[in-house]
Length: 118
Image (cartoon, rainbow, N blue to C red):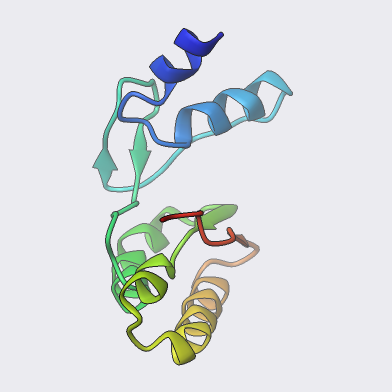
């Protein structure tokens, strides 16, 4: 299993294990976005490592036209890591979520906790 798991992350990040788990339980899944990475089928996404929340907010405009039923977001680690505007990161996150909810009717926005890092 370890070899299969490491193979599934090859350029796919969390996308392949998530997509596979959802499809295995019967959910239809279509990953969307303007970027394509990894060796998996259906490898569309809009993720960009290293972006601050304000940059994620700007990049979200590229994915809004897809009208996703679920939007996954992980942002904020860079504020903690670099100790930049950490005290207002929650306001930027709120602005991002409100924008997504107002521009994509019926969507659900899922925010992750910050990924453990150093």
